[in-house]
Each structure stands twice: as structure tokens, then as C-alpha cells.
Amino acid sequence: MRVILVPVADRPECLLALDTAFDLAGRVSANLVGCHVRPHREEQRSSRGAKLTMLLEDGALPNVSETQARLNSENARKVFVRMAQEHGAIMARKPRRTDDVLAYWTEKVGTPERVLGILGPVADCLVVSRPHANGSGPARAFMLAALMDSGKPLLVLPQKPLASLGQRVTIAWDQGARAASAVTAALPLLARAEQVNIVCCGPENSPGPKMNQLQAYLRHWGIDSETHRERGHEETTELLGVYRDTNSDLLVMGAYSRGRLRERILGGMTHEMLFHSKLPILTLHG
Figure 1 (cartoon, rainbow, N blue to C red):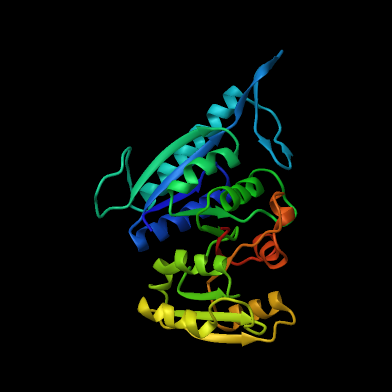
Figure 2: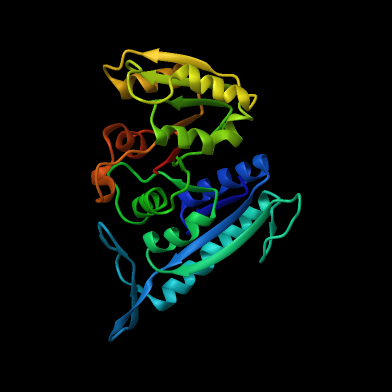
């Protein structure tokens, strides 16, 4: 893991995401890219001047004046620079070989889907804060764009400070390719974890590796793990139970969907964990 991408705005949840992302970058010797998304300029001009709007799948944000858009951009950059300085990262313009954590700032015009569809594929991991359960707008749009359009692992954080992250990791295992891809993406963290737990809810009767085979794979990487088999009657409840009982501070799971309509297509457990849980989650939608 060498490049971590974080969408940045001057909002409290972005501060939390940046704080965790810079900590993570220091632990895994990665660099961090902060990106502020500026809205499209509308062609129409009102009597009060040019207006800007960002079009999202669940509607449009209120119009923003050019002056406000510039101010938002400046404030976002100030937040990023301040957080980089607090974490001892060095601001840079071009990649270079160094043992230091480098911080890069960029601004792009467009929607979250378009921008993260361009920058996400050339990052190793994206970090966002979880939107409020009943919220809409930027936080939801950025999380869904990071998940659906980047093709890369996404770390979803709760909107509160974390005492730790990745010290005790729970893997939600379903024998599927997406869960396997999420595990591969999490290897830099799993290798540094004090404890790794593999949870399977229900019988292992699907095509694909069983828990003991995943456990053997992790041993190739020098990672010890424990397995937990649950009955599979209430998968979400059972998974959360193991997570709590093992005092875990990170959940690794694949993200599943049924179609092409954003959160409407996310599977039951995926939707529950992304939008309604308060856990830090590393996930991947293949």
C-alpha cells in the first residue's frame, strides 16, 4: 500500500478521515493524496452572478456561487495542509523516493463519480467517513463513488475518533471472490495486527475456499488467525457479536450488489454495515 486517497472538504467528518488516513500512511509507509472536488460551472447566469452546482445521483446540492466555491476550495486545502503538518508529513508536488510520508494536494472539477473514477484506480486505498444513516448529499455520494467507481479498497470510518484501528481485525468470510479480494487488500494491516479473526456464518457449502484454507493462506504471509463458525440464522447479528466479543477495531468484508443503481443494489449485509453500523470497515466492490 503506497498511495492513500482521501476526498477533502472543510467538514468535521473529513478531519476525522484525514487524521486516521495520515496515521495509517505512517504505519504502512504510504503517501497520501488529498482531493477536493469542485462543482461544474453552469452556463446559465443569474442576476446575482455565476452559479455552480454539483449533480449527484440522489439530487443536486444547492447552487454555490463562484466566490463560495473558491472559498470552499481554499478552506479544504488549509485543512489538508494543517493535518499533514500535525502528522509530520511533507507536502510535495511530484512522487519521489523517500522514507518520509509525502502529502499531495489536488483539485478536480466534476462529480464524485467522475473524479473518483479517475483518481481512485491509481490509488491503493480510499478513505472516507460514513454518512449519517438517513443523510444524503456529499458524504453519501463520495462513499458510493469511492466504492463503486474506483475499483480499489475503501476504508469507511465512523464519524467519531477511533482509539485504535487494525490492531484486532475481524474478516467476514463467505468463500466468495470479493471477500478474498478484500482480504488481499487488507494484507498490509493484517500483517501488523495483534489478532486476526475469521468469521463464517452458516455452512461452508459454496464453491470457494473454506475458512481453514484462508487461514493457511494467511500463514504464508506470517499471519496467525482464529476461526469462528456461526449458525448463519442472523448473519449480521452473529458477525457483530464476534466483532464485539473479540474487541475488534476493524472489519474486512467484500461488498456485494445486485444491479447498477448505487445503494439500491447493495446487498443486505453490505448495506447494513456501510450505512447503519458504527464500525470501521475495509471493503472492496469488485
